[in-house]
Every structure is written in structure tokens, then in C-alpha cells.
Amino acid sequence: MRIIPDLGRLGLRYLVRDHLDTLYEIDRNDTHRKSRSDYLIFFGLPGILFFAAILFDWRLKGIEELLGGVSILTGLLFGLLIHVFSLGLKVAEDARLSRRDRLSALIEELRANVSYACGVGLLLTAILMVGAGFDLAGPKGLPPFLSGSVCALFMHLVLTLLMVIKRVRTTYKLMVL
View 1 (cartoon, rainbow, N blue to C red):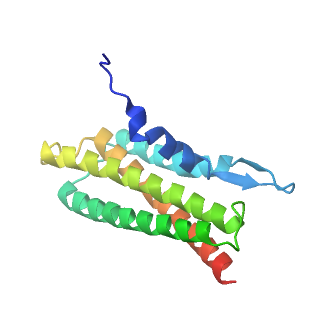
View 2 (view 1 turned 90 degrees about the vertical axis):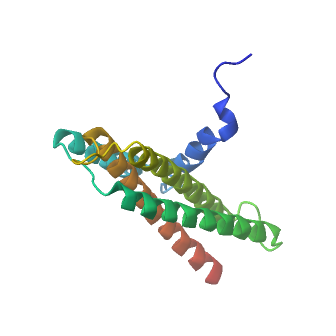
């Protein structure tokens, strides 16, 4: 009998791995390699924000309003995920496109990024729900560790959504032109 549940069933490892696989550069020889600048932007900047919140004793207030906004955004992301999934199915069924076509690859990367954004949104929503539900904010606001976590996750989510917008634009240009 297992005491610790099998978290692999949740697919979190694949969710993160698929997203990280989209953080690459293509060099002159058309080979993919991990993009250090992407990692720095997507994880370094939110990390700096997290530590700044702790260092400068930042405290978020109005977490109920933040919770409402983030939960609505996360719900909209789920809708976008379903749309990207159906778009991927349509492209996969199109006989004119091969599996290795750039458009198919972009849609797969878009799916990975939107799925990851949904996961980050869920995590952010859960943290805000705990903060609001247990009234952790109090009169001063959330403690700096939680404030930094919320700020860092929100920045990470916004950066991921900017990447999603870029991929949507690139995909659109490939489909239309």
C-alpha cells in the first residue's frame, strides 16, 4: 500500500516539460538548443521580483479582487486550451499538411504553452484562495513570502501569455500567407 500518492497521474511533470521544450533557439544550422535568455526572462525576472518582495517587505492587499481576476483569467485560458486543441485536430486531419509541418509544430507548442499557463493560473488561484480563505492578509496584507510568490507567479503567467500571443501571431501568419 502506498502512503504517498502517485502524482504522475496528474501530469504535472509533462505539463512543465512540454512548456520547457518550447524555450529554444534555432541556430544557423537549423538545430534547436535551449535558450538561456528565455530561461532568464521566464524564471529569473519573477525570481528577482520574489526576492525583492521579501527584502523590501511588500505586502499585497485586496487579494479577493486579485482572486476574482486570476480565476476568471484561468477560466478563459481553459477555453483557449480547448480551442487550440480543436485547431490541432483540424490541422492533423488536413491531408495537405504533414506531421512535421511547421504549422503543426507551432500549434503543438501553442498547446504546451497554453496548458502550462492554465497550470500556473490554477496554482496562483489556489494560493490566493488559501490566502483569502484563511484571512492570511490581515490588516497589513499578505506576508512578504506569499506576496512575493503571488507577484512572481503573476509575472511568470503574463510572460507566458506574451509568448502565447507571439505564437498565435506566427501561427496565423503561416495559415494565412
